[in-house]
Image (cartoon, rainbow, N blue to C red; front, side):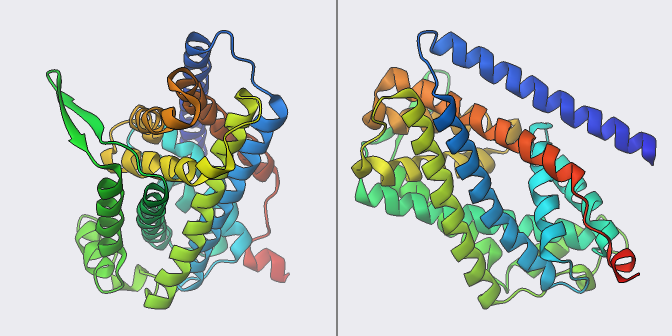
Length: 318
């Protein structure tokens, strides 16, 4: 088991390192003359971690409503550290890491996994609606989405965001998600309804509230990154558009679920939607700089939290 943990840890470190090197290479290639203000970049990373913490607190709330409740800090710690796993292709490493970090605190691996799925789908539903609100305030022209062989399909970002929001919201409806979880748990022996947290309309409402706050902070992270590149930053009137762009780009990247960490899709949507704010060239650099700020923030918080290990319940009681 120790050898397996070492191998998985090395795999995650390799994936994160590869991602950082590629991001830095892309950033230098597209913006050789651009200078990034380290203070604003650090501010963008901090805002990103604050947004992740909002999502993580909801993840902890789900575990509190489970048959094997876990304290909020271990849940938040596992949530933040496990984000490094998304850079391993397939995205399953996030769930593996989260479950592994929480079993010492009384959580069943299946419960931690179902909580992770529910939190993620709720986050995506809120992201779709946040993007919808932003594009209502600052409409954009149709986006030409490539479908292969040189063909494109014009698509309304407003209706795309609304459709994604409604679709994910249906999946997390308290009467729907337990049925979905039963389909997922069929291949795993010994995983039954007793492993599920207690889902309710109140829990869903809490999740949507925490997630809206998280998306707002993630959008402000992009605002800070733009400020690190452009003197004066993005005008305040464009902030709703920036928040909507970040939300839609991330949700679309998750929906495609092909590239690790939403790569390519997320940056592609961001680049297209940020053009009215900073122009074509700086839109590319802003999207790449945001990716760099986020991964640096994830590595930093994972390094700190890996050294801070709360005592398991039994040890704490002694």
